[in-house]
Picture 1 (spheres, rainbow, N blue to C red):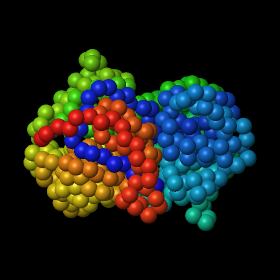
Picture 2 (spheres, rainbow, N blue to C red; picture 1 turned 45 degrees about the vertical axis):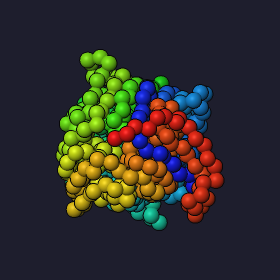
Picture 3 (cartoon, rainbow, N blue to C red; picture 1 turned 90 degrees about the vertical axis):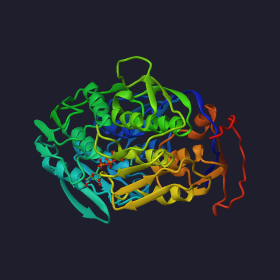
Picture 4 (cartoon, protein in one colour; picture 1 turned 90 degrees about the horizontal axis):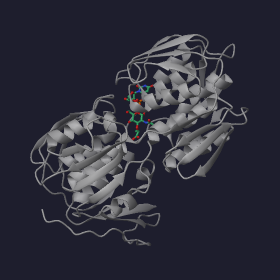
Amino acid sequence: MDAFEIEGGARLAGEIRVNGSKNAALPLMAASLLTDQPLTLADVPDLSDIRNMRHLLDELGVEINQPQPGQLTLQTTDTSESHARYDIVKTMRASVCVLGPLLAARGRARVSLPGGCAIGQRPIDLHLHGLEALGARFQLEQGDVIGHVPGGRLVGNRIFLGGSFGSTVLGTANIISAATLARGTTIVESAACEPEIVDLANLLNRMGARISGAGSPRITIEGVDQLGGASHRVIPDRIEAGTLMVAAAITRSELTITNCPLDALMAATNRLEAIGVVVEPADDALSMRSKVRISAGESLSPCDITTQPHPGFPTDLQAQFMALLAVADGHSVITEKIFPERFLHVAELSRMGARLFRQGPTTIVSGVGRLVGAPVMASDLRASAGLVLAALAARGTSRILRVYHLDRGYERLEERLAAVGARIKRIGLDEHESPQPKVVVRKGIAPAYQP
Ligand code: EPZ
């Protein structure tokens, strides 16, 4: 099991490019189930979640090729299998995004219920409610949701998709994908407004769908009889971009981030500026592929953060900003309104000297100026990113165990951070996670800074 060993205190410098978005790419790949024509996707990151989705789609009869790095062609060649098995779904909850496309294209689907995960209970009731409104019928058997479409074709409808924690991103992806092939018009109210939904709608429209309003809470889909092939470039990953911005800030460095979806990051840059971090886009126009210089001085101000659905502050950046605020000059309050239990990183950051007081969905962060290195355990994807950031700024050496969580969403993060000066290396530990590394690879040694 791999771990990262990080010697904190190195300043970062140079340029780093943001990769294509994992959370955009997964539903885009699932859209290949809606047509028998080829889809070509560019800028697909090489991540374990993407490999899991490839495996799942392969089982569902989609032939996938990779003509060059970052590019995938996907074509449905066999529609006989409609079962997303537990073995795959349990490794990647986003597998649920095949449900809508399967029902729309094949009139049937069997998808294992994803269950909870480290960030909390994660129901799919809103997905099922929306698909039922389009005419699908469901039953539960052996932990699998089995759906079928009486009459073979979904029928457009008005759907309210809001829940207790706002809308649902993958639920919206499922409903709009399914509604593209429904008879008649569908209106989704309280749709998720995330940029990944806009990217999906753009791909589906290229395939011949008629979707308007994506990016707003009301999306209208006029159903069509069939969809065709298309080529599409995945949007850059806003969460990776936000994580890199925090990497610059927490190490008091100056970093240039390219292919940066600044237009989708206003809540995050607003908080960075409140903290005293300088965010300088290369040109005035906000774009999804900007070049941005991030720099921070020694003094970081505290601030309050509440996670919300887009365009509010993203829950997927909460752990990273907690690490940053842990070294700010005062008290900050972080409130989690999307996944109220998403605080497993609190105990691990505390092992590094962070002063954190959690009460329900809120954590008070009392800045300590400098963290200290420690062995810590990654618990989920974004919590791992928070720990890596904390370790980059900590005094001494940290070891982040179980970085397979991180590998789900950040491609070769250690190599890319080392290339801009971080003292970080991947080490292979035996299955008992013994403290003695078997393999040692040292990269990117840069001068340490004195706080
Ligand atoms: C997506 O998950 C992302 N995953 C998550 O990123 C992200 O944290 C989340 O959206 C919120 O932005 C992918 O895109 C693959 P939701 P999703 O349905 O769609 C509740 C990461 O780290 N809810 O928008 O599954 C739910 O419990 C991952 O990259 C219901 O109540 O999240 C939560 O409180 C982690 N019923 C809220 O809605 C439902 O049927 C938002 O969840 C569905 C969701």
